[in-house]
Image (cartoon, rainbow, N blue to C red; front, side, top):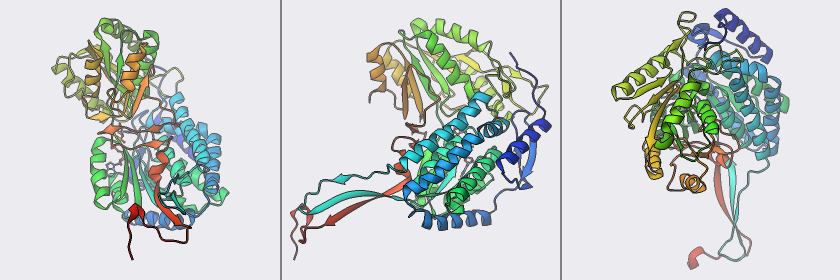
Amino acid sequence: MTSTALPTTDELRTRARACLRTIGAQVTEGDDFPARTPVTGEHLFGLRAATATDVEGAVAAARAAFLTWRTTPAPRRGDLVRRLGELLREHKSDLADLVTVEAGKIRSEALGEVQEMIDICDFAVGLSRQLYGRTIASERPGHRLAETWHPLGVVGVVSAFNFPVAVWSWNTAVALVCGDTVVWKPSELTPLTALACHRLLARAAEESGAPRDVHRLLLGDRTVGERLVDDPRVALVSATGSTRMGREVGPRVAARFGRSLLELGGNNAAIVAPSADLDLAVQSIVFAAAGTAGQRCTTLRRLIVHRDIADTLADRLTTVYGRLPVGNPFDAATLVGPLITTGALDRMRHALSRVQVDGGKLLAGGNRRLAEAAPAAAYTEPVLVRVAEQTDVVREETFAPILYILGYDTLDEAIALHNDVPQGLSSSIFTRDQREAELFLSAAGSDCGIANVNIGTSGAEIGGAFGGEKDTGGGRESGSDAWKAYMRSATNTVNYSGELTLAQGVSFL
Ligand code: NAD
């Protein structure tokens, strides 16, 4: 199924300009790089990229603002984030429009992404009164031993195209209440949403009395990111994107003893056990695998199904895949919008030809859609492929809607297959057997940062910490105690005894 006709590029340009105007964002047009839309694949307008001098100025300004911000009481810092959350609520629809124009997300997912920003603001406001340190029992009489958490400095946020605003907010809302200032280098594919978010935060800063430079924005490609990453005044680099990017960024930050928080690629799997509720599993699998056109870091890419039910489940999925509405992401009936670029479509096709050479059997999907209406856009049917083994291409992340289906006989075999990939982001098991579920969640089960039962791999809530192991980079963002990555701890010993007692019974003088 293909949904209604696509909007024209002119209509999208007008819509984007109207949203930016309502939000109050200034666009400095230039010819360094284009703002484009995957909806038609065409350019909207040209933009100016940050120069080396701009990077230098932004980091210097954020560093200067930090010197004030770090001593502003944390609950007052929370006032800024509370105001940001209010402005995000007010402009939810415009922001979601921009997300759809720039990232191609369907309307409900675009609104969901903005809601995620609002949720993390609420979380961070609460956090601003809960930056707790511990008091530790001292071995010495008349001494108090405690841990204090202090702001870290300037946080450099480098973000990916597929969550153009949510990832920024996870980092920024938390970093701001922690007393840090932020310099953001968004994806070169999504500058307009970045301009909108930056403007709303600037307004929140004005209205809540925070320093203007608590947040700076740098548009441009990876060279701008590299300058930010290499700047020794940037205390923490939080970088979200491909494993390739993380392999470059991690060592560069480590070489200057900076801190990094890496959120990289995933190759997420679900195990479907014989006892699974298949109605629930089918719904969850289709959302996780075909939602966001397969362009989430948590997208379900591998399905490991017990052989007794593999044919039945594959048949049911094939039927659903056959009627997934692909097309105009602004149309309420559409479930699958465009891939970000035709390059992404080429990579998807390359992966499909490799897996077929390896013996994989295409069960559903794979046809390009709307190629005549929008030759520069990349609409495709999500794909199901049955594979006999986990070959190299299956073990890689192809950032497109391809779901590989593998079979298993024993749960140990399924868990081994599950963990036998370089990435370790998200995972799930569908089972009604509690022992299987608990084993999957145990130390001997999934090796991922996210492990779920009877729910898909994507669509995490902000309250938990988000991130993954192995080639996914090891970072944790968003909820739980992920805030500790944005602060430094100090251990304090206070002697109120009037006598000097050395630790470990040491005597001296
Ligand atoms: P990408 O790696 O191409 O780019 C991400 C960002 O890094 C962009 O802003 C880019 O300009 C910048 N960048 C690239 N190389 C750099 C370098 N050497 N130094 C500094 N900055 C550099 O990723 P993408 O195509 O935008 O996004 C898709 C990828 O991101 C997928 O692999 C996906 O799994 C991953 N992702 C991960 C998470 C997560 O939380 N784990 C979330 C979203 C996306």
